[in-house]
Amino acid sequence: MTENPAKAVLEEMLASIHERREKLARHVHHREEPLPQDFAEQAVELENSETMLALEQELTEKEKETAQALARIENGTYGVCTKCGEEISAGRLQALPAAGLCIDCADLES
Image 1 (cartoon, rainbow, N blue to C red):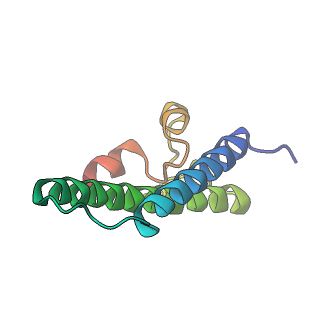
Image 2 (cartoon, helix red, strand yellow; image 1 turned 180 degrees about the vertical axis):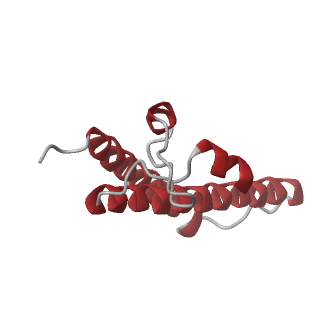
């Protein structure tokens, strides 16, 4: 049985996501210094923290999508739309290796 070439890409994506999440977690959740005394500086710090938390949430979603794509490779359903069962185009999978929806179903979702 030949290995799906997307598997290596997805595994690399997952490793990169884990690395970025670790860096964000260190920055956001392990803050060592107190907030600055100046209110304007505090506002900037808190806004940066909110941005970092949003990035962390985005990475969590990408991690989930990537893990699901790897599971679809393992169970033989990679490249098949999880909603309608039609084949996902090769171009879409090349651009978005973790895609679980064909372009038509993805358009309906958005």
